[in-house]
Length: 270
Image 1 (cartoon, rainbow, N blue to C red):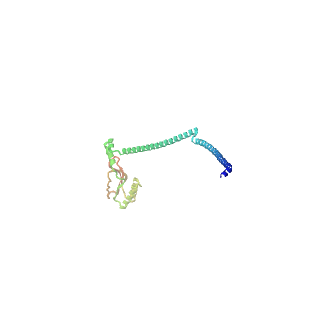
Image 2: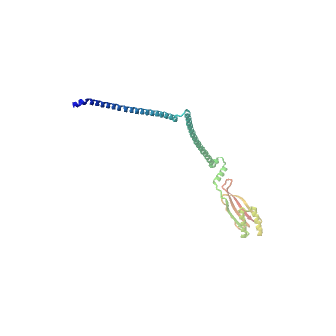
Image 3: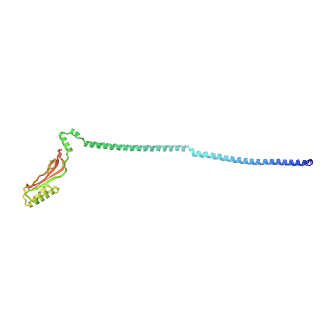
């Protein structure tokens, strides 16, 4: 061993030193290569970050300007918008005022109508009260006779209008002749003949029948006042012919007594 060591010592040392150098050189080379790559990577990343920052700065610079443009109007625009808002508010207030005024006008019109209607009702009631004043008030300004007349007019109910009673009778004539005269009287009662026309027709008929008479009396204007329907009493055996009828006008005596105005119709042949 010693012989071998001594013989090959120099070779082993040389070989070992060579290995050590190789190892050291490889370590140095290995250590230098990553650093350069890292430096390159770091440089690229640094440039990328710088570019990103520039982009971000540009973006951030652009965004505020956009926000300013959209959010902060110019002075003229702000004044215009303020005036528009004030005009809108003023218009709304005017509309509200107009609506309120219209409502007030409608209410006042309703009140005026109600007042006018109430006044008309009051006037109507007053006129009714004037028309329907009690008797005592009328008696204050009236004489005693006028009081009686007014009370009679208010309390009395006149006899209804129309024919109330009619009767006829004959003397020295036949029943057929009486029937003919009755027919003439009915036409006269209906208003188709006047008093004079009936008288002329009766006289002509009597001449045809060869009946001599001294007088024919016809009247429809026998004014009379009755408080009740009068009774007519006629009997045969007197004049040639007699007719009496009573007609009520349905009106009260204008003097105020409790009587109704009548007209007595009569025909007498003597």
